[in-house]
Image (cartoon, rainbow, N blue to C red; front, side, top):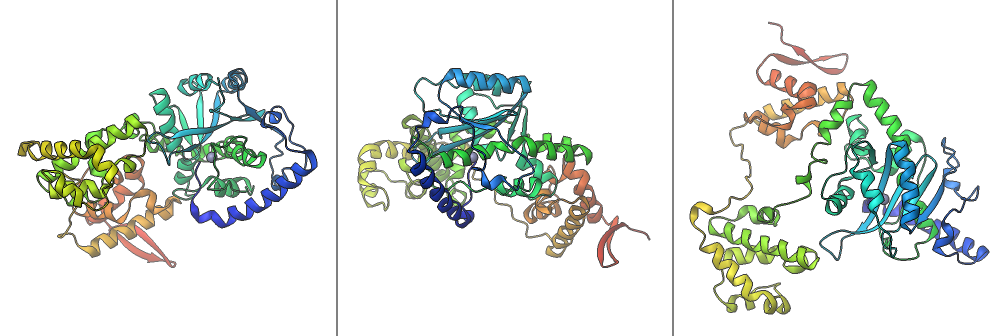
Amino acid sequence: MSNTPSRNEARNEARKDAQARDQSAQAAQGARSQKSRSGRKAPSGKRSRHQQSPHDDTREVEWIDTTEALSRFCAVMKEEGLVAIDTEFHREKTYYPKLALVQLAHSRGIACVDPLAEGLDLSPLDALLADPGILKLMHAGRQDLEIFVERMGSVPAPLFDTQVAAALLGLGEQIGYGPLVHKLLGVTLAKTQVRTDWLRRPLHDDVIDYAADDVRFLKPLYDRLNGELESRGRRAWLDEEQGSLLDRNTYVQDPLEAWKRVKGSDKLKGSSCAIAQKVAAWREHTAMRVDRPRKRILSDDIIIDLARQKPKNMGPLERMRGLDEGVRKKFGKVLLELVAEGENLPRDQWPKPKERPTHRDVDDALVSGLVVVLQVQAREADISPAMLANRAAITELASGKTGLPILQGWRRKLAGEALVDFMEGRSQLHVSGGRLQLHARQD
Ligand SMILES: [Zn+2]
């Protein structure tokens, strides 16, 4: 899982520690080869950062670089009906994320699988991920899932995402793995460094240990979270909440829709929208074909400039800021063709930009009142109000819009109905014992 830059400092401290430990370890034993990790029992006392842990975890961390070893590890996971998984990947230089490491855990061991190893075939793992009888445990798995959808063509299910589960229990909307492990299990993890080059070989032992920690606690977290969800009657909420994570369409995007994600496209009008659509779709296909990030092909700004200026020949392209010569020489002709195609598109085929809601006629005070009602409901359910709806959604509700998430499923029961009641005058706010309460109106 990726780390947020805000934790850089803690991470740098951990890194210094790790380097110091690493250097003394290397000096003492000489550099070990990557391979020697296989089957190596972690020496007792080495994992000093886990000494406070209630989990006396003596599982070995195995470096897996053969299909046979992966098959053996997968056989145990299959037997246990559970795959605890995380991945490390890079996508700075490619369109498709480049898988660099796969971490797996079962009750007896932890594996760091090297997808770069020559001859290693991930299909034993793919088979487990595709098996509907095997539960997949992940933390904030969206990007990992994207990789597997690309590999396998389908979304691994069933899934238990510990970040989503935590949010449904009021533990924070998007709590990180480290903080969650700390909160629920009392274990303080050293963080992996944000700038770790996961594609490098050999990986340092400490880096491998940190990576292993990303799956080490998934099962204990699952046990705690799942138990809580069950006892609070929220297990079904998880399925609702994970619906989009498990929907293949979340990961596979239509190139014809790509222009809506181009910065500034919501301000385009008329045939400019058609041009932006053509150029952005072309950029998407080209980026996929050459496996390069889309913005390395063409920047968002250039797409907007082309859509606005509608150049007819090379002249304006030469004067366009930020369009470098190499790109212009290589793609200039194609871009002019795309502009012409967009411009000539019949009016009834012009795509429409993403709608920007305007709510001039909504009473701001009413919206604020509804936000307060939302806060009361969230407090009673011990969940973050932001998990239910934000102010923009409440504004839409106040303007009479239907089909909003707050009016569906568990959100409806927890807060949506109360909001509608309040809006229609059937309830009122009232202070009692220093706390704001919502009551049915008594006339
Ligand atoms: Zn990770």
